[in-house]
Length: 189
Image (cartoon, rainbow, N blue to C red; front, side):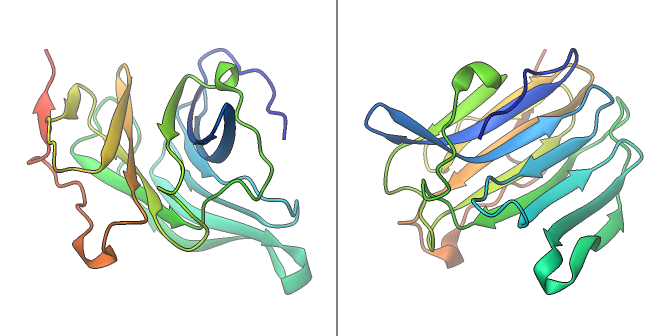
C-alpha cells in the first residue's frame, strides 16, 4: 500500500504495529486541508473499504464499500454533530475499531505521516484490542495518567486535536478506560 505525499495543509496520523524492525500500518487518520477528518483501515480486499468521516459542517458517518454484498458507499449511522471549526467545544468520539494486525500487508512508512503511534507486538490483534480516535477542543491536552492505556494527542492549531487511544488485547473489554470530557484534559497555555 503506497500513500501519496501529503498535500499542503493535510495531516496524517498512523497507528503502526512493530514487528522487529518492520512497521505494519493498522489504522490512520487523515485530516484534509479543508478540515474534514477520516479514519481509514488498510484492507487486502480493495472492495472492502470501511472508513469513518467527520466533515467540517458536522456531518458524521461510517461508510463501507462492499459491492459484492450490495453496499455501494452508503452512509451507516449518519449523524449531525458540531462543526469542525475553531468554535468546536469539548470532545467528539469518532471510532473504536477492533480487528488489527499485520495480515493486511500494509507497511507503514513513518515519513508519509505527520505523527505515528507505535504499538508493540501482542497489544492489538485480529480479535483482541482496539484503537479509539477522538477529536478534542483546540488548546487542550491529556492529563498525565499512568493507569490509562497508551494515548497520544496530535494538536492541529485552531482545529480540533486528534487523540488516539490504544486499548490492549490484555485489557478486559468491560474495564476499558474511555476518555471523559473535561475530566481527562487540561488547558494548554
